[in-house]
Image (cartoon, rainbow, N blue to C red):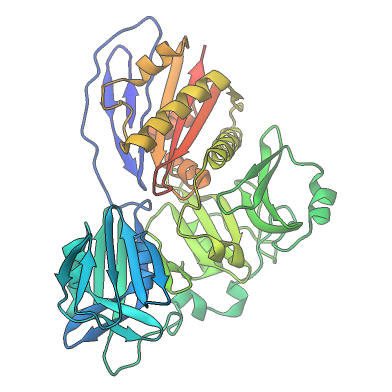
Length: 466
């Protein structure tokens, strides 16, 4: 979202990968009206798409596996072994059943099932129609494709079905195209000579002490190395070993080559992955021009592209396989500590991008960061996403109330990205907001993050010049 105050006032909204960004320029001594424009909503990376195998079609009735389906719908599950009773609780709805029940107790009332509970493979199967009847979800049984789709707000859960008497499909049974590429296309990635599995001693011998250490949403620590944000790299460390890499400058394949753009990256690394499989669940990747995900021998490599610079490689992130597999869902667990770490990480990558584009890094401003944090917390707590609060309080009001005077100021909002890194790369690919991030007129930055009830992150970047 972009908002300016100048001789010709204007307001525009951009929506990118579940990132709505607000940018305003306000010369301190000028006052003018603000015109609003509705945002254009698009399919984004921020929406969660997961796929579950193991559904069954019994007598033309689609049945979904209780445990995996309700887990993806974020229900709390319990099992009373003595009475063999299964219970699920989700958003005030509690239902309980036993194997072969023909009706289910839902908040004290009994709901008749289209088909009785079915037991197989140590799991219980419920009719798809029961979920739509009792939970606040929409369902779609695509019979021709033997799959059911459950729409739950921002999340879409696809359950793959097999008909009774046939073998259920198993995850990994049909390798994706990138898995069929020649072995040499799944090589080790290095950042300034460091690779996954290297020891902390190896890294220290090369780089010395880190400039900053921040905990990631995966649980490992990002160690930041740079020279005034030049030659920037992040090394993820866990239990004394490298578990992740990030760079917006130097990286390379073992043969010494460094793909320069999207074409070269795909030629070197093969077909991008369409999803990440974790256990019995597939986490789909949105089709996008801004990045590709590649499955390599050492882990999951995300290559970010600059859509405004002929699809040049802007940055890369490599997450070790086991580390990615251990992350529950997209976001990890949100907390106050996690929000502080994410804010610090975003500050680092913003400055790295500025220096890479020939600009000076910004100074951190605690007061500005407090205002940014307060707005992220308000959005997270009250479940809205806009520069103005439901009461109409604008960024101008928030800064004035905090006693912040400014000659130039800007605010970017982001939500729904997996991390501060993904959010920042998304903002860089929106021209209006890129101008804000790369403006030579700003001197200071404060970042505030917080998490909603579903651990969905909210980021506020506030740019400031006294």
